[in-house]
Structure formats: C-alpha cells, structure tokens
Length: 315
Image (tube, rainbow, N blue to C red; front, side, top):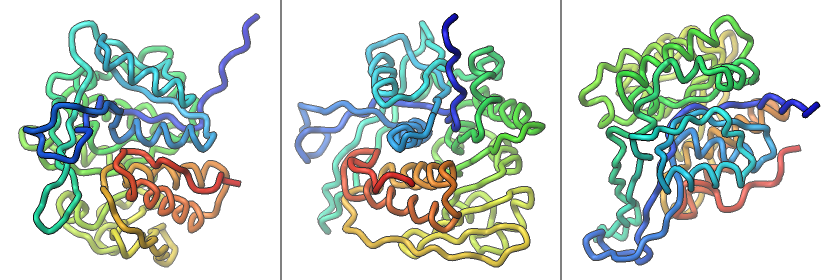
C-alpha cells in the first residue's frame, strides 16, 4: 500500500500572483523586457518556510494558464504541498507589475500595479475549504497562516476567511494572521470580515501604522485591548523593532536590524516566515522574532519578494 503523505506543520491560505519586473531600471512606459517571478503574501511565507525545512502546504486557486503553471512549478520546486490548490478553467491567475522607483531623491522603492480583479483566487468560496484534500491540510496542521489581504480579495473571499475561522475554532490549530492592510482592497468592500479574522486569531502580526488605520490605535495598551482573544501579538515598529504582547506578561521589545534598504516589498512576509519557522523548531519567542528580523533584513537588500539567502538554518 502507498504511504500516506504526512500532514504539513504549517498551511498558508491566500493568493499567489505572477510578477513582472522590467529588466532595466527605467520607467514602465520605456520598459520592453521583463523578468517573471512569483509573489503574494501567503505564498511568499510558504516558500520561505519550506526553504527552512518546515513541512508546508499552500491553499489557493489559480487560473488554468501559463502563469498558474509557473506558480505551481515554483511551489513544488521548493517542496510546498499544493494538494489544496484548485484550478479555475475560466478565471486568470493574478498578476502584478513592479515599476522601478525613479524619484529625484534617489529612492529605489518600486511602485506596484496589481491586476487581480476577477482572478481565480478572488473567487475563493467556503466550498474550497470543505474539499476533502483542503480540509485535511487545515485540520492536520499545527498552524494555519493567512493575511488580511485574503478577505479583501472579494466578498466571497471574506466569507472563506469566516469559514476558516469557524473550522479552526474548536481545534488546537493556531490561527496566525498578518494584518498586511491594503487600503485599496477595501475601497469597495465592507471590512467586517477583516475584523472578524483578527478577532479569531491566536497570533497577530501587525505594524503600528496599520493598527492605527484598522483598530484606531497603535499603542501597545490599545492594541492589547482591541485584540483581547490573541495569545500573542507582534506589534512592529519598522526600524525600532517589535513589541511582543502576551496576556499577563510585560511587553517584550526585540530590536530590529540595521540594513541599507534596496526595496521593502516582501520583507513583512519574510519576517512572518522566519518567526513561524523559529516557533516551529522550538525557539523561544525572542529568538523566533530575531529570526524574523533576520529574514526581513535579507529581503530588504534584494529586489525580489523573498530573501535570496536565508539566515543560518534553524537549530
């Protein structure tokens, strides 16, 4: 009899997109050659976790097109379990284009142009989670990770996140949520599903600025009060580092690392992956946060959405 595939330790749920970046650092209107990579918050986390050797699965939907085939190829190449990925015969795989920064002050920060409306991932529904392969991944994982981008893809994606929280609530599985707030996604949507996802989370990762936008406060005390169910909150203050907030314990500050930033895209996802990898291998929380900082630093110094080189393997 064939051996059963072991359950992943961590399952990530969310969109992946093809990424096109001009080969030369010129304005987009003058670019005629592009490199193709893959991005997307939860997909970035899944790839980095798998590179750390963490058994990882990714749940999503892709178009039946060349971009979708490439996303699956990249995931499999990294060892990510894609048995929970659904192929849509009608809707396309999402896409975004990076326009290199050309600011007179020398900023190299890229501008992102997203083409994700009507994508296969935006058509996620609760039925995706009910599929036997997907349900097995989610209920068999120690941790399920999702970002606040996912409920913002569409109303049906918001309902999917509600269903995810309902599925995990009676289980020992940890629900990890990276707020990753994108105001443009919520322009025409009710953000109630985002708040319900945060309220259901066991662990929340968020920046001070986005906490102010979504929760109305960026202080440690205010965020604690706004997320009373969370077992752990990582409140990120960019170059000042991270405050770890846990019920009944004093705030713990873990300083950030200093690097010369090339581009910030993907650094938050790398931080989440490093932190989750550290916790998976039993690192104390401060050391896991430090590993997150190191992963973020490795992403800040490259153009890609994932770190080119990982920090030393997790012991």
